[in-house]
Length: 348
Image (tube, rainbow, N blue to C red; front, side, top):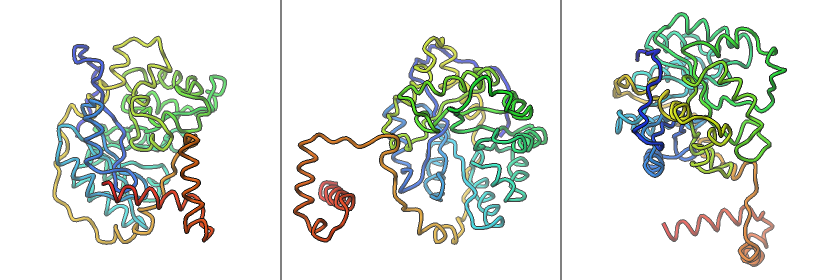
């Protein structure tokens, strides 16, 4: 994959709804299936997307299937699962051979897996870097990698910060600022309702940081992502994720928004063909290693409460009080989950 540092060229005739989602999770059961991804894209008229494996859910099968089914519409990003450096490097090599454009990595994971950065750079792949300006050491590490591998780039998902003010900008080391200004560094503004926000939509406590990022990256190096399906756990909607920046910065002209929604991502991620999707063997150790945690609970619902109408809650309460769960002193949550499971089993 060759990086092309050209200026964004947005066709305004394509319509305001042309969007590319640069950060969607995939992986059953927690992060959804291939069918869920395409249904969401079709429902909201999203033209293309990058699907990224989520933590502790090594569903490589779904990731590879989405990439194979629609190489014109989907790019894939993997995660280096594994109990040790040898396994993580093996699985990274497997995912690269299967056609991912890069890997989602923290600075700590880079250090803990010798050889992974060289593997990705030699193949011209990218890094979806978590908090790359978290320290001067991390920023310098990524700057050195970008210098060594001119065909690669770094994109930073959920690159948002609520505890930042212009007065604090000097706390960022010069290497962090240099990384922000690097022509092959991209900020993915996703997780709009998370990352510590305490303000209601459109979360004005992000405003100072977003203005700071735009001042250093410009409008041609910021891209949009929804973080599907995690936004559902925060009681948000896909439309809110998409319209968030235009609501946070209401005076923004349309060409800049269209660059953010699709133009930049099209140039960065879809202008060149996807890497070949080779047939690979997934290591047998992967599923057994994660079998105990892959089905962990989903935190419904973050940053809010689940409000039920009084009459509906009263019916649930009466049902609970009359149930074996109540007699056995099992919590209401357990009753609610079993009731919901029975309802879904009966009707679907």
